[in-house]
Image (cartoon, rainbow, N blue to C red; front, side, top):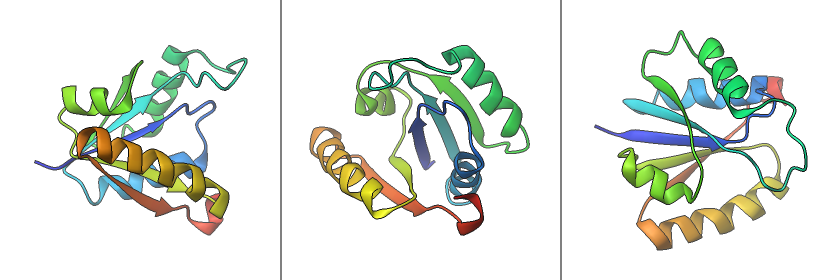
Amino acid sequence: MATALCPGSFDPVTLGHIDIIERTSLHFESVIVAVIRNPQKAQSLFDLEERKEMLHEVTSHLKNVRIEVFKGLLVDFAKVHGADSIVKGLRAISDFDYELQMAQMNQRLSGIDTFFISTSPQTL
């Protein structure tokens, strides 16, 4: 069973996030949306539980998606939850530069591959 992990801070949840989650759910049997606290953001708009609840509401129509909150290394979370792949949305070339480095490190640490999906133009 192929399981994808869609990590992010989702603070707040955007139409772009929903687009990536919906499209990922079409290609994988199971999708885990992993909500993290981004330590690079000084102040969150919503706490983790609020973000989890918002994501649950906007993805309730997707039966193969579940929402989880996590701390620590993404690859450790992926292993514990049986995720085979990480899926990241890209808005611009600047996203790719950062995400490529993270994908290469995650692959080196765990063997888990990262797939990139470009955001739909209507959700930018």
